[in-house]
Length: 381
Image 1 (cartoon, rainbow, N blue to C red):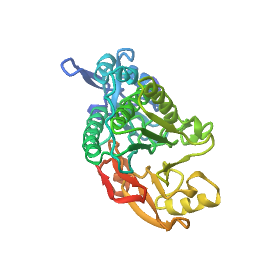
Image 2 (cartoon, rainbow, N blue to C red):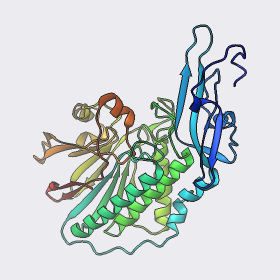
Image 3 (cartoon, rainbow, N blue to C red):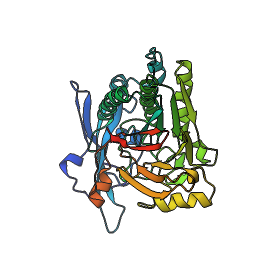
C-alpha cells in the first residue's frame, strides 16, 4: 500500500485490485495489480514496479483497468490491474524490427499488364497498427491484412491493370498522443508500431508491383501526427506517418521495385494524383466534422488547395464506408465523387459504446479508365 495512504485509515479494495502478481510460464503471460495508491500512475514502467514486476524483463500488454475510491477529505485512492508478458517473447512473436528484413527477400517479377487503359486504386485506411480493441491486437491485425492482400492479389489477377495506385489514407499506426479515451491500450511501443506499419505497407506495394508500376499517395493524419495530446507540433510535413513512408520508399528503391511516391507540400494536408486525366484527391478527414466533407471540399476550391480541383476525394478517419456523388466538374461534365473508406483497425469500442455505431473492416478498391471513375469496379475486400 502506498505511503500516501494513512495506515490508520484502511481502504477496502476489491480482491482483484489488491496488490498481487501471477505468471504462467507456459503462456508467458501474467496478471498483476498495483494495490491501493493515493495518486494516478500513467507510466507503465512505474506501474510494473508498483505491481512487483521487473520492467526490464516484462512489459504491459492489453488494456489497463483502473479502480477508484473517492474520499471527501483526502485524495482519491486508485489501483491498477493489468496483464504483462516477457519482453523477449513479445519481440520474438512479432519479429521486430522487420522492415529491412522483409526487403531482403527478392520481390516477385512483374507481370505484363493489360493493353486496356485501366488503373486500379487501392485505399489503405486507418490501419492503426498497435491498437487493441474488440477485434483483437497485433496478431489479429496481421491476419486481417494478410487476408486482404490475398483477396487483392486475386482481384488484380482478374482485372490485370496497366498500373496501380496505393492511396494510404492516414492513421497508419495508433500512436500514443491521439487524445483517445481510454489511453495506453496499445500492445506495441511507438517504434514497433512504425516498423510494423511500414512492413505491412511494403508488403502491399510489393504485391501491387507485380501488376505494374505503383504510385503511392500519402498524407498526414491525427494519429500519426507529431503531437502533445491533441496539440499538433511542427508542420504537417513533420507527420510520423510520412516519415514511415520515406523509410519504405528507401527500401522499395533498394529492392528495385517500380514505385513512385507523392507527398503533400510542406504545409499541406492533402494531395492530388492525376490518373489517366482523372484527378484523385486524398485527405485523412480529421479536417472536418462528421458529414462535413462536401462543404469542406467545396471550400478548398476557394482556398486554392490541392484537392479543390479533384474529381474524386478519398478520405478516412470516420471508419465507415460512404459513397456520395457531389457536384459536377464544369470542364468535363463528369460527376464528382466523395469516397469515405472503411477502416482496417481493431475496432473503435469507445465510439460504439457512446454512439452505438460499428462497422466492419474493409479495403476499398476501384478503377480509373480513360472515361473516368468506373463506378462498376468499386468494391470492398
